[in-house]
Length: 445
Image 1 (cartoon, rainbow, N blue to C red):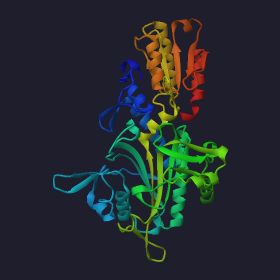
Image 2 (image 1 turned 135 degrees about the vertical axis):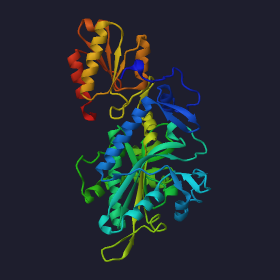
Image 3 (image 1 turned 180 degrees about the vertical axis):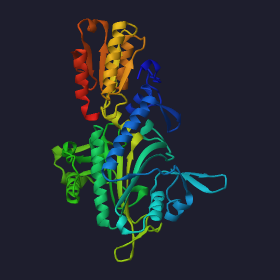
Image 4 (image 1 turned 90 degrees about the vertical axis):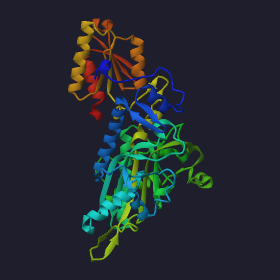
């Protein structure tokens, strides 16, 4: 992609309305623009990040055995009245009326909708277990939207829903999602700690939030320090008992949000030198709520002896758009964003220090073609701009690697290769540059 033709409206100064780093940098890097309070347009650079995050989430859901669907953003109020949540949900629900005076709502979540779909489509226990998910825009009318995409009113979310014949089987489904979430966040470079949390308006009695530690986190969290270095399970498929073992290993040490925190319990469970008290950003939340929705909505299947059995369910959410902000909160410096390669909008920023020079142009275009052929996404800065402006832009948008091509380096047959995260610089031949980048990015190609 040539930067001279790309829509990248970067900003030099920090917008006054942006309170936290991720909001500041997403605006400055030309990723988003505010449409109205808590509602944002995603510009090309931001949308590329959003799609990368979405794809990792999708791959790990598919790997865990979930099946993708797509439900509407607008739902009938009648369905929510049937479950008993329409009047209880509160002012965050945007209630609307269509031209026929039917009560509708902009979905804040989809437990009712998916339970209806499953109720109408599955009749026998032989068709269980099942897990259905979608990645869709949601709307919650936050009384005070703030922090950019971290607490907006409209947001992109992955929500999955499990359906099982018994509570025991439902626990297995819960454990599969628990491990899928650990793997999902690891692929994004994040250490997300599962913590016992309140179930809120979703309901149920089993729930974990996955939080990333950050100074600007919205919640105070308390945990055992060893959780920050806990190893994830291997990449193979796990048996039910192995899944339970992973969950037990992650939950046997103290970890709680402020809503569940008990000081005496924390101090008794965690040695003083292992106590962590910090701010955290919620990036995922999972629930097992049994028959909370299947009972009022009549979601039952015929059991092995002909009896009708009420389905046991859980729901599993990941804030896809929120993750874009959360990753920036975890990875940035004074110069800008530092994207992990797995979610970076482009892998390499190719900087031509003398655009229009035949040798520089030819060298850049050769490298651009070779990297593209290897599946490496390149943003080629071919603009007629000062070198300092080009460096500042690349540091701001945070691509993992930069390659700097100029007349001086070409005389000695070398490109300069910069690692954005470490600042390390190497002088390499064109062939060695391509080989170095292919090797460095092999895990995400």
